[in-house]
Image (cartoon, rainbow, N blue to C red; front, side, top):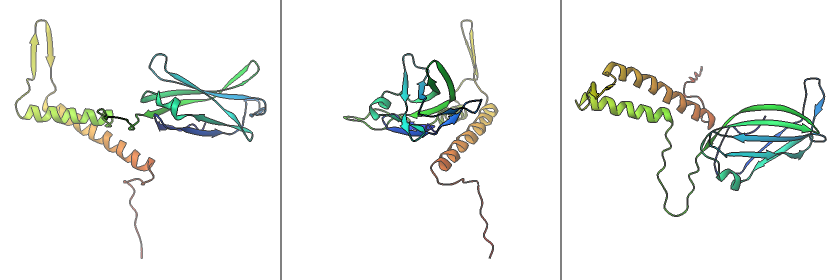
Length: 190
């Protein structure tokens, strides 16, 4: 399946899939089969169906900019189903990421492009600063409810884990954007 794994809401999205075979070796091609992608997310009534048009022996798909504008940012799931008469065969499933569009008209609204790991890291670092400044209570009780906050060693350990996760995300972005792996070391011998 060649559907892009990441795109922005509001973009025109195109891809092509080649013909394939079923478990018995019978050809599944655009000559006698149709192929549809069903996309869904965790928002009620949010979904999209993309029907392929014949391209050589395979199919070509387009999600228009108008259609993708309504896609909520986040994780989407897809299922590619080939149909011929009453036969249906799932050719692939997976997930993709729809990123929020930065395009706007009029006055732009607030946008937070940080990943969840970066948001969590920022919150932990704020909690550490607050704890060090003496502004946080370790434990308190209101009525029959108790709340216990993290202690400094726990926060420092969590900060280390989150820093590593944020670094992995940044490395993955560099690789995805064709800027190489920052962990690679190259040596030249003369």
